[in-house]
Length: 300
Image 1 (cartoon, helix red, strand yellow):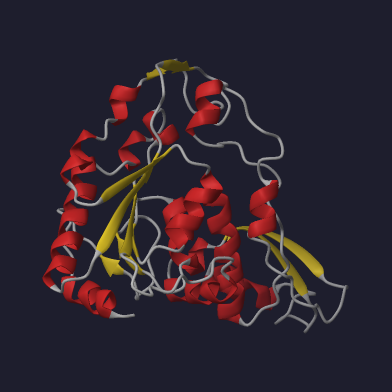
Image 2 (image 1 turned 90 degrees about the vertical axis):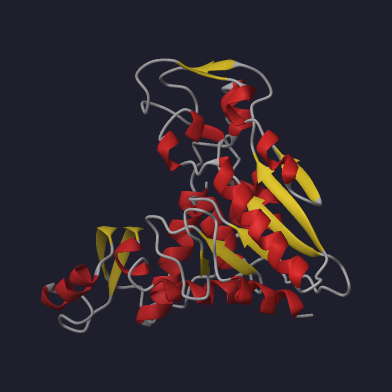
């Protein structure tokens, strides 16, 4: 889900960066629908409908309905330069060309500040402080990563360290806060087999998943912590995208929540997708520039 939404918002952001028209393509289906679906081995064929409604982006009015169509696996500057030599494309003979982009990251990852425009179309309104505690949302990506590509998971110790640095920075300026942990854990032991929903052919042998694989005991040291475990993905996205401070995972779901968060401070562990310059980079030990966080914590 996160990867598909990131592709949509990334494509929109790149279109604004380039001054190009945007034609919206909604989600068609979602294969991985969360840990509960994986546990039950059952997917909802209409799962994507709620996300399409929430994350709809209006298409631009096109000046013509006559254009050449090109499918682009990954949009890069080299692809754009090549359009000048394609007959019937903008830059060639002045005609219109519709690029059907699968991945926008050849440009979006080079110019990540382009994502700033997504705040303007975010479906999530900012929540005024008005004397309430600062909301610190910690996203811990687990789910299907317990079965495939487990190397992508950040250790719990990293997330705890970041949260402790956040707590120390906010305590130093006497800002009241509420910490939230958003994650998924299995409710029982179960086996994931080749062909399993959300997994497909990514594994060649059964993998056993159990609650002990994702124990949250390490997080018990955090103050004022509230757990949000196995919540609906759309509810989790809303909470992350409206948090005052968002501690990201190495996750497209985190990334989408961050680019849609209008006013929150984003703490970003660098990974294969570059982050906008407004995000605060976090080191492997959970350290970051606490002065930037403290300045935001004093804001009303």
